[in-house]
Length: 336
Image (cartoon, rainbow, N blue to C red; front, side):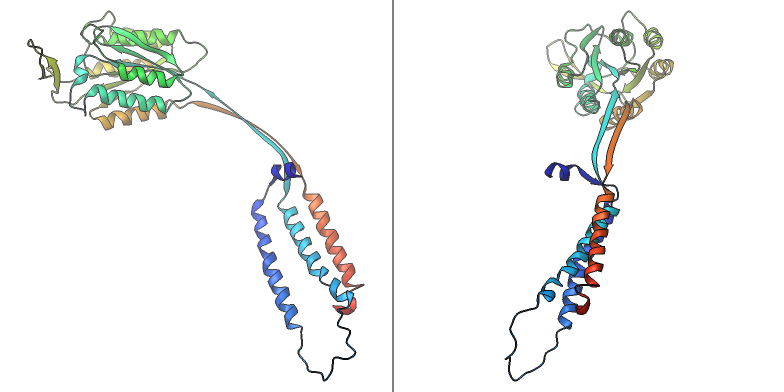
């Protein structure tokens, strides 16, 4: 019985609100029964046995039958059902490689606290928003390095993002090498129709074996979309450097801006999109936009099987109504 009650559901549960009429009806018949009593005075109670006739006692059964019938009919029209519903949801994950520029200019302080830290925060927020995707990280300066292959272990990946730096890389900005390494890492993955690279840089190509356009063509051959993000303000930004005396000082970045035409060419060539980030907040918004563009595909397979129990409740309610009519017109006829 307990298991039955746990599995029961109603197709039209809002009809159960009609049961709120039951206490209203009980209040009505109690008030009506009090109005039937008449007060009168007699000189003696001799001849009264003090016992209430059995018919009057059992007459209380009529409103109980009526209320029970009403409750059963309401339950019936609400269509009680038992059974099960299975929902199978399958998602098609995406393989994503983030190619992050870690050259010294990424430590410019036009973002708070600097471009590098702002990029790391935005990247980790993006990782948290994609729990079903394999995501990896390639870093580049004068050369490229795979900081983390594409993985579902996002906590480990975020730790690798936090430790990303340029101390073990040659100086420069090998954008093409970073993009090409990201392409190679995605080329190794199988059985996924959607592959994406997010390339973030604040500079122009300085050094490296491959041009960004050649790397973009390689991505295009593998149906990999590349989203490019140019980071930095229009004005020259202070960059921390170490002088000949070993002191940390700031110098103005001699470049006016990053290579925006090149970033647009790379994204257009691969079917991606170019974004420009001139603040920490704008950078976070860009990652959110990419998250919305590259939505996962879900397939939902729902199996439902429910048995209707309308008949049993309706039959029980009708039987009680018939019983009340029979009792009212036979045994209790003289009292109603």
